Length: 359
Image (cartoon, rainbow, N blue to C red):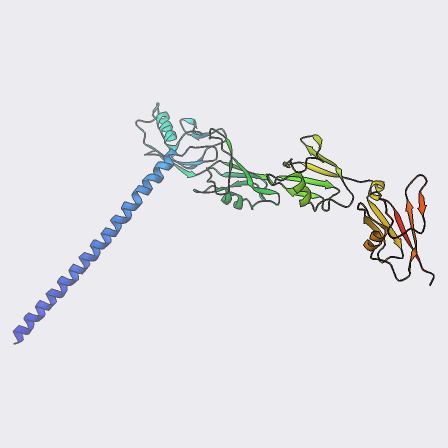
């Protein structure tokens, strides 16, 4: 019986060891499969990145890592591309690299070293730092910002402190020296390249001046007519001469009183509404004074009577006499009309005086 127990123990021990060994092998296989998957995914991306780096066009401001196998004195980290577009190395001196790819720079350095200095040199060139982006114009902190892969116009402007109060996010151009068309319009989501200059323009505006309610500088909107521009400035003022409206554009002045609905404003326009003279203003109003509730100047309308003018002035006061109403009318000399009726017609510029009752 004891022998059987020992045999069973030996069998159990062997089975446990076998199971543990199998589990370890399976775990190792899983781990190796995971590593293989990661490598399979990473290698194409690494190849793409390396290829993109080799095709990168160099320019002033880039820095390069240059390794010449077996030649530490000819190997450098962060060697700058200086203002002339060159790098400077021992033996071969200046090498122009601006405007060519990393691959091209590598081939040129290899060729120069092989020309009487080294036998079959092995040269590796990589970019250690890409040239910066320049942000100018209407930003808070114009100047140089560091480039990063995938940088957009929005990113660059943010690094430059954001737009100034006059900055227009719809008026941005990029200057790219290496491009066939060196300057072009962009939006905030446009991707940048190393060495680009982002130029943020001012908000396009126009001015409305003169006899309007709120003379001011307004933001330009396409298809805004001159009449709409005046409305944006609060409309005509009380003393506006609607027959005298001038538009200044490009150093020339135009009479646009009859074209308010057909002519659109343009950036930089100055629209001026003329003012009536005091005499002309008076001719567009009547004046009511004396024993009325609200004496003052009131706009004249055709067919206006004495009674209507007094109603505009709030009506008679408690002390008013309806039989003591006089009108002073402009003329040379002025004419005085005494004890007029409420139904009498008034003329522009008339001064109506309501007398007091003696009772």
